[in-house]
Image 1 (cartoon, rainbow over the protein chains, first blue to last red):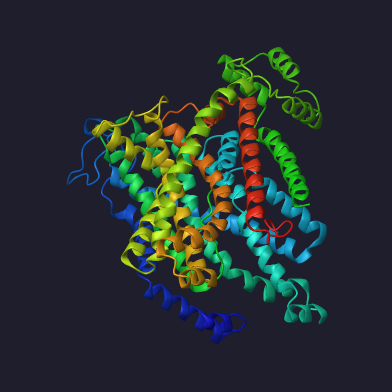
Image 2: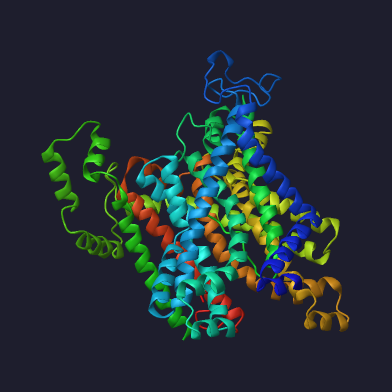
Length: 299
Length: 312
């Protein structure tokens, strides 16, 4: 990975080299390419799927309830006679959309806090990091569950809860990176030369935290999907008749014996999506950040 | 010295956590006294009823005063009364805690029993098909929603094969499926960690040295390599405790186990705030204390860890 090391501080040519190294790595690792394929297919399904699927995800046809998979309904129908495949396809939009949005908010808050804490140091750093510690005193999903529950059951509140709970990992990692480069000569030189603080952040600090943040964010997309589905499963997230995977799974719990497809279709969908992001995230980590042990965080 | 520092930070964190626990319920949109009375009685309460409820529950005091009162009583083991069942929150907690602890311990046992041997085998046969296979299984394991795995286990082992009960609590047989459902994800994470950490020590000099002394392969692996490889695993077990508590909430709903998770979920939907605060506080205390103990163990196992190494 020395190509990456050399390229990290460079400009145009260096960046192209980084890009090539990543693509090269992704192509050579079968796990990573499988992850990439899953994610791309899902993206296509979420965008194009709803146009292609012949059934509506919310139309109830009671005489068709609990039908086993067939040619008309490849994944069967649910307890209200809705086509399960159509619901899965529309559900991909919710899962991917929520995951992207929640992760983006986490990245912005976490990176911001981490940059400020690491750069400012002193009591600002102390206060911010104790806040992180306090939040980490709660298991993430439990805290999100309580926040979402108190705000009231809705998909929007679940997103708020997951966003405010999950930024701490980014803050810690970014702060760590900033601390490690803050004292390097080129940063100190830039500071002495009177570089404006904004430029210092943009030019020297941010580029160094991009790689770890990208890796965590990719893995995070998977965990956000799991958490959203979990909270919806409990009844806090998407409300009926929204075709959300977690809600669908909970719809099927009373029909385990007679209609196994209702729980298993969304189960497989969630698993494949999360697997895709995990495979891709692992690959990115190996390519971008081989020494860093970015863990699969829960929440 | 380390013990003192670490106890101090743990106390600060717990104090902060209790502020957060207490403050959470103030996120409620609207007048909470009114909402609670509507839920309790089913109709719009009179102005007097709202006032007297506020008075009774001490909701008219300034929030900091309410917090100090709440924390003071909490320290004496009094977390107030449930709004609905008129039972003491502490009593409900004591009643629901065992089922959760049971599940947590059982699933961690499942996870470690699976993860350590597979992780070791994976590292020893690095690059082989055993390694690739268990890596793939581990990835699938972390990617599976545990509540879905729970239903899969119910469909196969309870409904079809009739080997275990579908739900509820009772003897060991009620614990098997939930423990597997919850332990699988953790097994996957711990297995990956054991593998990485075994790979790191397996080439070290003392392992080579042990080999050179002529010790048999298995003894080298288990006695010399594994013991050192397990040091980082210990910390992760602390972190995994969060994973277990997160998962326990959902798994208890799936298997209808009367634990802290179901208590919390029911209380949230009923807006039974004293119970919500109580459960959250207990979970935070459990979690902080576990991590504290884990840090101490880690420090003891590996004295190179310096002051505050955990967060810095």
